[in-house]
Each structure stands twice: as structure tokens, then as C-alpha cells.
Length: 104
Image (cartoon, rainbow, N blue to C red; front, top):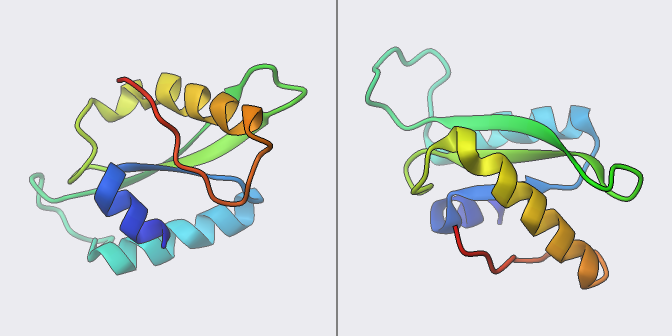
């Protein structure tokens, strides 16, 4: 499901413990066909990043994944979108699965 969401939207926020998110990153790379030892500069890539979302007491740090094939923006500008999506998720009760509606 996460790999499908990455292919559709280019970015996914995962609300899980950091060790699980590291394992998930490896699984996603495999599902997306991204080889860890590929040295081709034009290849697709998956970034596993994290950021703090304010208010930190309510949201804290979150992990997220950016898939270069389908994310239309500079991956380094994803942090603001992630923070907005997490806050939107909080306003609807933090369901297990949620797709935010944002205007990048």
C-alpha cells in the first residue's frame, strides 16, 4: 500500500518507530525496483527523511519518503508539505490511513 501511494503521490509520511521506518525504506526500495548499489545518476531514488512538526509536543518527529519518479517538486522542499499534511491529519483525529489535500 505504501509503495502504491508513493507511485501515485510521490510522498508518504509514516507514523511508526524509527527502526521500523528504516526497514520499511528497504522494503520500499525493493518494491519500487531501486537498487542500492546503482551508480546511474539518472536513476529513480527514494529518500527517507525526517523532520520535526510543530507543535512538537503534539506531533514531534515524523519520517517520510520521497520518490523521485512521481514527486513533482524539489525533494528538499517537501518538509513544509509534510508539516502541513501532519497537522491536517491531526485535525481529523489521526486515522491509521489518511491522504492530505494540499496545494504545493
